[in-house]
Length: 187
Image 1: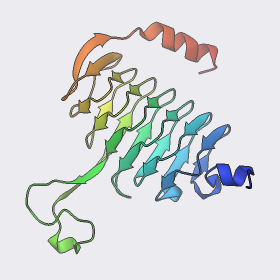
Image 2: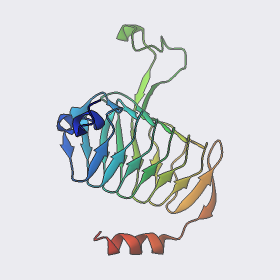
Image 3: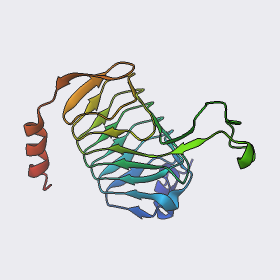
Image 4: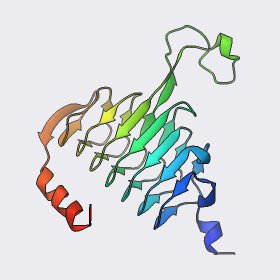
């Protein structure tokens, strides 16, 4: 068995930009790598599937089996120090499912349902718990955390913890400690 690095990691040369100290599992599928830019100190684990454009900041972890869908006209922006836990579904683009046409990408465009393309933003210091679903056009504000299994249908407020389906605010986070740590790291 060949255990060379090329068999363990994704071919980062395909990406628009890739910073330093980046690990991407070879079991990651990035459909449009030429539209993906990754910062420094990033880990993207096995089973991650990305079809949208993406801008990923520094010190970001994308855990196993995260899905980011939306195609080339949609985008994911992830700020510095953000985390996306296992099994999250980020839906940056989707059919409207209102009966205007077929909801299959295999149908000719003139017969297709209306499609919403958007940008999902996960601002710096934010985090998504395991199995969170984020709908199109949502901004997860700076420092916001979304509890496991939650459904995010509205933009969040900074430094607030959300839980539930739909996600509702539950508690305010301590911003000072996170900012202090980032400053100590040179940010």
